[in-house]
Length: 65
Image (tube, rainbow, N blue to C red; front, side, top):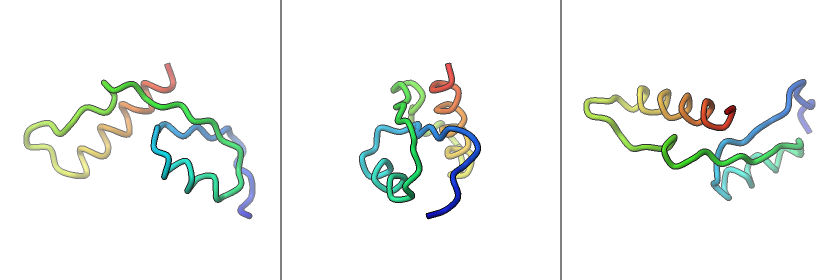
């Protein structure tokens, strides 16, 4: 098993598959699904990297508040 991280792990996703994958590491974690507004769709002319960065940031802000 990898060494335990120094900070708590929060899975900002309601995905059962992601929960399963993270659980395989054996680390304790908390699941906090983001609101639906944090998972809004693609904006016009957004590149895939921009979409991923925007969604990750929106989820982190939503879950942290």
